Amino acid sequence: MMDALDDRIVALLRANGRRSNRDIGRELGVAEGTVRKRIRRLIESGVMQIAAVANPYRIGYSKDVLIAIHADLHRLSDVAARLAELPEVRYVMVTTGAYDLIAAALFRSDDELFEFLVRKLAAIDGIRKAETAHSLEVVKRRYDWVPPSTSPDPSHDELARGALL
Image 1 (cartoon, rainbow, N blue to C red):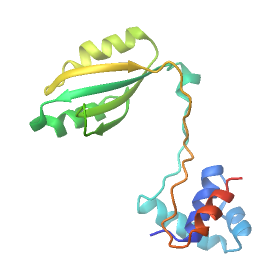
Image 2: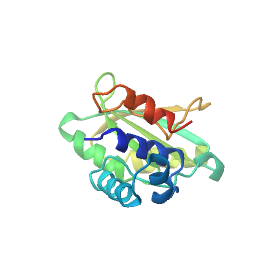
Image 3: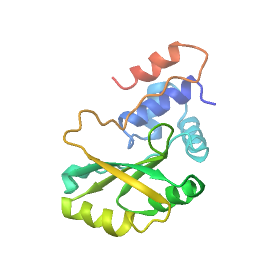
């Protein structure tokens, strides 16, 4: 469970993941050791991670593709696991609705996408049908998503968001 201090620490790291524990502690009025312990707990519990994120478009991966999949339901978990192993695939979701799975993948060219579809995707047993949708323009892509606070005090949301300003 996160409290107001955790919210503020995460918000500050979201704005600058390289910020020092000492600097965070000074801004929040707590000891550097408190910040260090809380960050370690948040990472170890899986609440957050700190990572560098490459911009795929800047390194040549301009083909951003959604793949909507109909799969044999008794093989759904296997199909999802196989998709998740493919390096081109950024994420895989088991879904409700019109499709059983949705995957997002990145490619440098239409030729790469074609090779992926006919060699890798076609080789996965349990896929009955796949449809692709090319992204023409990315209108919004955020990596600094601010979750609603888990605290019963509504001012925590404002505090966490304020740390980003």
